[in-house]
Image (cartoon, rainbow, N blue to C red; front, side, top):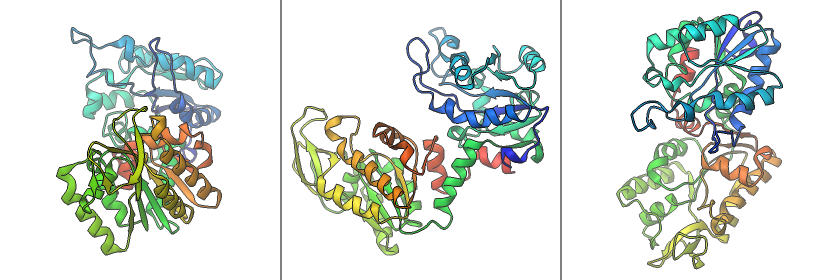
Length: 403
C-alpha cells in the first residue's frame, strides 16, 4: 500500500528513512541528497495532520568503535542530520537521544500533530542488523502507522526496515513516495519494457556484476560493457589485454555469458578501442589502441572514440535504458571521457522519448558529475537495492510491507 492510500490524520507515523549521509570532519552534512529525497513523504504526512517519527542508520558504528570497544556516539549520532533537515523543512525538528526505551517513548508521547522527531541511530543497537523481534516490537510501539521510505536499505532484512512491519496490519503500513518511485521505475524495465532495451554495464569486475548480466541476458536486446570488467570478456574472446584489470578465474564464466547471449540473440558490445596508460595515474603516458591488442605494460582505463561512437549509436536507437557503472576510471579526468559521452548519449535518448534509469552506485556519481541527473528519467537512490531488483530478487523491506 502506498502512502496516499493510508488514513493519517491524528496519527503518529513511524517512518524509516535513509539518512546515511556523508559528513565532514566537523560532522556537517556534505551531501543532503538522501535527506531531500525523504522530504515529499515527510511533508505529505505533516499536511495530513499527523506527526512524524523518523528512524535511520548512519554509518557502521558497531564496526568502527572507539579503542576501548565502546560505540563512537559522537561520530555516528543522527543528531548531525537534524539541523539540515530542519533547514529543508523550514521548521524545528526534535531529537531523541535514544532509539527505544522510556525516554524515547516520552518524547513520542509529547510529540504534537504537525511535529517531527528524529530517533537516534538504529545501528547503535546490535539487534537492528539481526532483525531482532523484540527490538522491532519496541520500535513499533512508537507509531500508529509504519512507512518504509528507505529504498537504499530495502535489500537488508533489518529490524527497522523489515521486522517492524509485521507489527502493523495492512491498513497501517505502506511505502513512502521515494520507494514508490523506485519500484515503479524498476517495473518499467522488468515488466514488458519498450524495445529496443539496452543495458549499459560498467565497473571494475565481472564477479560484481555477473548475476545482473545473467539476468539481463534474459530480458534485454543489447548489453554495452565498459570499465575494467570489459577486459576479462575481451580476454575470454582470445584478445590481448596487457596489464588491464583481469579476473583470470572468471574467464570461463565470461565465455559462458557470451555463449548464452549469442544463443538468445542478445548483442553484447565490448569496446572496440581503449584509451590505455602505462600507469594508473592521471598524468600517465596514454595512447588509443584496439582493446584486444593491448601491449604488455599498458592498461585500458577508458573506452576509445570508436567504442564511444558505436555505443552511442546503440543507445540513441533504444527505447528503454538502464545504466549501472562507469565506462572507465572516470574519477581521473584523463579517463572520464567515455563515461561523460555515455551520459550525454543517455540524455539524448531520453529527450527522444526513451525511458532511462540510472541504477545506483558509481553511475549516479557519474551522471551527477556530468550535471545531467535532471535530464534522465530516473536516478535510483539505492545501488545495491536496485541491482537486486533488476537481478529479479524480492527485497526484504518490500516483501515485509506486501506480506
